[in-house]
Length: 198
Image 1: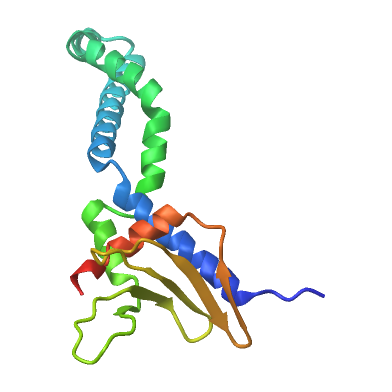
Image 2: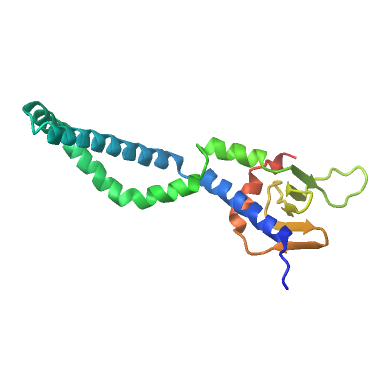
């Protein structure tokens, strides 16, 4: 009989959430907006062309509708074909950017989510003599607690920025550490919390 390790599952879920926020943070929002605008323009032009063609079919190719369709083709046909050609090669890029953006509206939205995500952000110093000025050497970011508990811990460099990260988890009677996760993404998340300002 195998028992599920709920603390490890929670740690993996927290790391997945952190990685999604970082993907949105690092998303090329300008390019995404450009591709979205191109796609919207294609849909608008296609819709107008389709509306005119349907009207032509319904009205038995009346001169007014046919003239409108010809005028549309003359005015917008080249642009529509150009956009369709571009979009056919950019569909994959758009899908990747949409996936990276996730549920976030823009970079600021992702930054806000990262800022509001942890329960606590803490630093601590090493040993020193009384009266010494102590600089923070380690950090801890608590993601959830109460069972299971998940936190990110690591060392700070001489600028007070995170230079390492570990994912630790605990639950009633179990504790552990994740090793197989996207260290760079989680470290980027940790660096967003202004630890160098402590």
